[in-house]
Structure formats: structure tokens, C-alpha cells
Length: 85
Image (cartoon, rainbow, N blue to C red; front, side, top):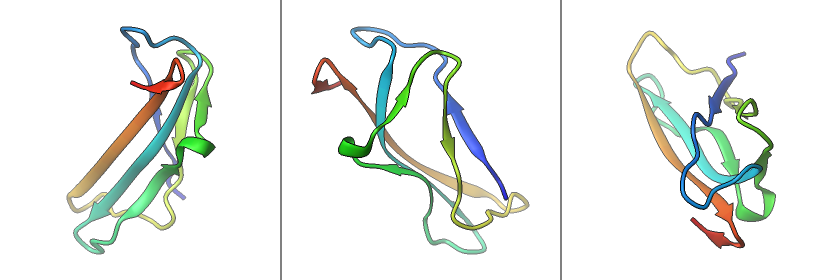
């Protein structure tokens, strides 16, 4: 099993901890070009990152070959002050 994660290195502007994140992160490889979602959350089911040490964990639904080139598809948003930032 492969587990991926993303760590927020820095926040700017009106953003403050905790961060509520939602959206899609998917990966494709050249062996199977179907999207393999690592992270897929709606605004209503957002993941809360509580501090700079918190990570958004991604778990692929099937293995991704790291021998061939991979393609990332990323669309991640945050909820800020009750309005999207």
C-alpha cells in the first residue's frame, strides 16, 4: 500500500489555523490512465488541518507505478471566514 501526504508549509493572507480543506487530488500513470483519487472531499466533508504539523493524508484506491511517469491532477480549496479563499 502506498500512502501519500501533503503538508502545508506556509499560510498567508487571511488564512489562519485550523484550515478546512476540500477538493480533489488524483494521480494517473501511463499503465492505467484512469484517475486514481488520493483525496476527494466535498466542502461539507472537509478535512481539518489543525496546525503546521498536521498533514492531509492521501490513500490511493489502487497502486500507482512509480517506474513510469505519473500525472497529478490537483484542485484543493480552503474554507476561510465562511467564504472560499
